[in-house]
Amino acid sequence: MPGDKSISHRALILAALAVGPSRLDGLADGDDVRRTALALEALGVPISGSLAEGLVVDGLGVGGLQEPAQPLDFGNSGTGARLLMGCLATHPFTSHLCGDRSLSGRPMGRVMRPLEEMGASFLARAGDRLPLALIGTAEPLPIAYRLPVPSAQVKSAVLLAALNAPGESSVIESAPSRDHSERLLTARGAEISIEEAGGERIINLQGECELAAGDLEVPGDPSAAAFGLVAGLGPDSQITVDNLCLNPLRTGLFTCLGEMGARLTIEESGTAGGEPVGSVSVAGGGLRGIEVPPERAPAMIDEFPILACAAALAEGTTTMRGLEELRVKESDRLSAIAAGLQAAGVAVEELPDGLIIEGRGRVPGGTTIEVRHDHRIAMAFLVLGLAAEEAIAVDDGGPIATSFPGFNAAMKAVGAKIEGAEGET
Ligand code: S3P
Image 1 (tube, protein in one colour):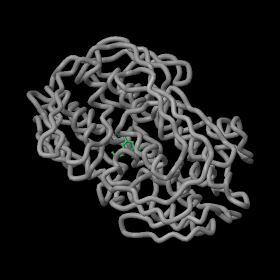
Image 2: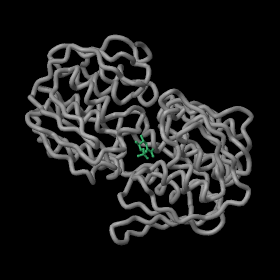
Image 3: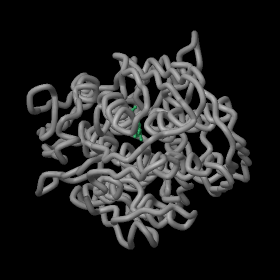
Image 4: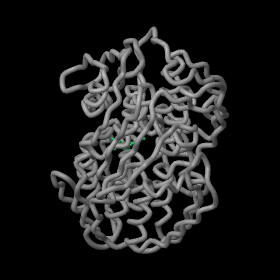
């Protein structure tokens, strides 16, 4: 599997803010992470090597980024854009940020508000959208910030801004979101502490610290593996994926598949970059519908497209709620999933905050799905096509390369028949 995308963005950024060289191996080599590396280079960070073969990042230290001469283009990547907005907010220069059509439609206000409290200012398009100009502050203020949405990107943006602010900053989250930033900051020697109180998680970070350089091996991405693993639930199949990040705040899909009756084995084998790592195996067998508890959503926020496809192949009703956030991902995923399932002959009801899917154990297929610039919609429906009675096509394979450039080859290696290349329509 490609390296974990979330960890790859953070590994690059924190290596850039450490003092001296860090070697990073196993990075995700899709377009999203490439854009973060290019943005860091534009901010003066010396980077050598390649994403596929390993990079050496010569960190400039906290506060050491330099004014970019060109706009920073984040392509499709919300994580790259929002995390770097955090860093840039507490650097005393102006940066211009832009992205593709999908990213330019996504809300940036959720990161702008706390960063404004810390002293940054913004000139953004209507609705707080990209392209925007970010005016970093020379006199950053620490912050205590309660996240209004359960978002690891917002949490991480505030923590990255706080690195270059004096004193202690805190982020309070009522629903724990992926904690890769906290783990990597700890590994790099930041003064960070985490408390759990009254059902909330409070992350305290001491600013103006020094981060230690060091080598890192990024584990495989469970969100990429999800597609092959669901494909492995087909009759007579058996698939194992090893060297996967098994952070419990990322493995909600595996819990759901277990509840649906999947034969699934998870084996932890060690740690990498402060994260638990191991293998996941699945074997074919029937699935049944379930009700997904809303509180599990942050631990599987990117996996609802593929879960919905598994639910379509199960027997019985699957209900998923509390998913308003899916409307502001790379596409409005509730709408994209519902439209795709309907086109494939599956009974589905779209709720304001979720989906009710009537699984009948079989999917007619024989349709072309509108991908809407969303890599996970494309991959989920191609996997559904493997089990459908007639082939499923996607209208745009291009977005797959943002997160999983080797998707077609990996799927073909386990027996899938896929026509066309990832970059093709
Ligand atoms: C990510 C957090 C999630 C997720 C995204 C990656 C991250 O977004 O959907 O793909 O790396 O922090 P939110 O923070 O908006 O929930």
